[in-house]
Image 1 (cartoon, rainbow, N blue to C red):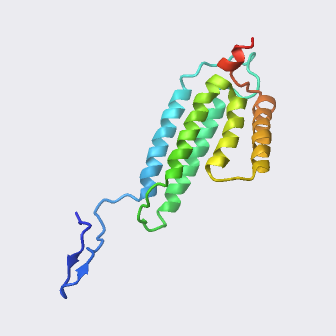
Image 2: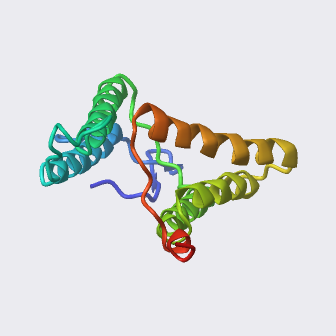
Amino acid sequence: MTDNNPRPDEEGKRAWPSRRPRPFHLHGDTLVGVAILIFCAIVFGLTLTFDDVPSALSHGVPPTQFPRLLVGFIAALTLLMMFEGRKQPPSERKPVPRMVYLSTALLLVFVALINWAGTMVAMILFCIALPLLWGERRYVPILLLAALFPIAVYYLFSEVMEVRFPASVFTKLFE
């Protein structure tokens, strides 16, 4: 194991220890890729527990098909990342920027807000909050994003794939 403290060389100067290859070393992209592939396998396994929808009642994309397609796409991109990562020399890890944690927290708030306020309201709020968090201060593009993106997503799921968004606690209050 090498230490991080420089030690004196023959001339008495401080020199950093040489980086010798370790006998069993996995590239960082390989480790991340394996973790993502394990996650994909777990999610795919969960789709096997979904109830089958009778073909007479099935309209559009069945509940099992879309998650499996998405997981397959993520797994394929992960394998590509792992393959391409082997061509690159391992780099020094930089600390994760604070903005990554803030964006993740905002995404978790968005997911929690879906059940209470509904998908469309949560999406509109997320499309406003995320650009503001990232420092965007041009309000017209933010408002255009907040108006057009949720409509496009709603149209894609409702009309093209014929998948309905679940009712929220907020919308159930008005029934």
